[in-house]
Length: 82
Image 1: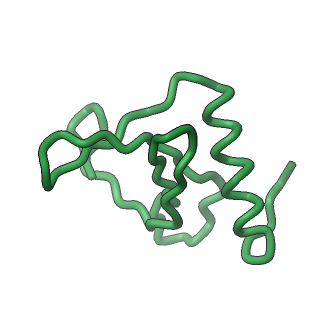
Image 2: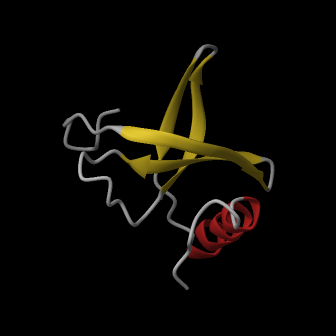
């Protein structure tokens, strides 16, 4: 995936969450040190029939709601810092 500067960034896909009739992808930045401590949540937008784009979320309430759903689904797999 390329960031807004056009640089290639690698992520591990963790989950796809539906919230308010929209889809959000949860990604973990890929790092050789294996010490990633934050997930990235992006909104999925269809660009064409077989392509999709990922955009940042400006609405803090939506971002928090999606993260709460993710934490609930994966509470037994990850140690979340509150």
